[in-house]
Image (cartoon, rainbow, N blue to C red; front, side, top):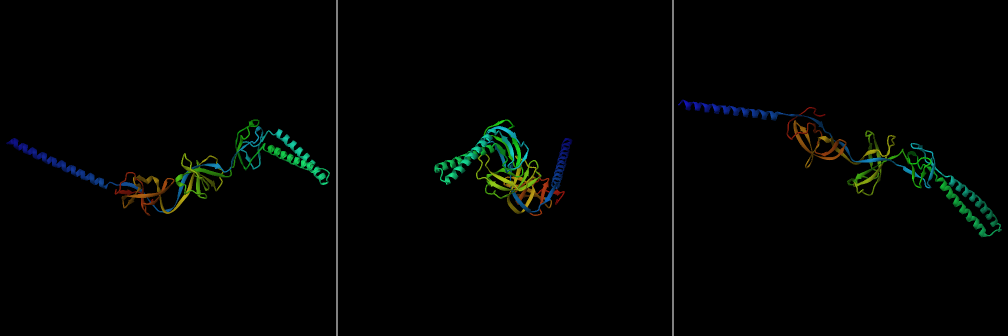
Length: 353
């Protein structure tokens, strides 16, 4: 009898213990749930406002002088004298190099003497022909001999003048390929002359923009590594064919202002003005998340996270231009957006900045 009573009491104690434990777990669970529901994340927001926006096509290019020439010797031969060395500033018509021309000078002098003689003979034959002293044949013979001598003289003069390599435009001698006393074959470049007062930027534009880039279009150009300096330019050439290797078409942009900081072959970034928009929102690109059906951002509304799908017009530096999905005065979440979900409670620590 005592054994049965003891077992009954033990059962009652076990049941009561289980109930107490169960109540404790339920209470703990409710506390955790309540704590989870009340937990909030701190975020920073940016109050957005619409503004005018210009969409740019961005391409990379290379700076080149508008005038650049490799000057060569027509006759070839030994280089007699280098008058303008590398780095020399020259004016149009200045002599840069003189080729060995002693033989040509002698030929020129001989041709000039022969022409003088034939010219005197022609004038004498012309006079006596008018007096009917000589025949017409003698007169014509003297006339054509004079013309032949004149042609020989002009040819010798031209060949002699070509031994003087002169500047076709104002510029600077950028390269020198031969030294004095060296032999240069006909047509071999002797020096490179570039114009340092006028530059252009050459670039390739992706073929999808072929209908949007036109001669006369405006551009903004920045140069590497001096990316802080920006100048304006005008498109002066648009190619008519597509390069097969990279599917781009060539353009040339003439700079509207000169700069002494520019050098040929410098890298440049060209911003070609494409379209102008009104009432567009400019926001940091880093807050935009790519999703399956487009792009999204988070905004804060009365302490609650809201998700917005947006339409992006273009990119400018580290920002994007948004046409659809935002409204004037929306509080865009810019800090703490990484792990947010729609409907979550947040605390704004710098609302409206």
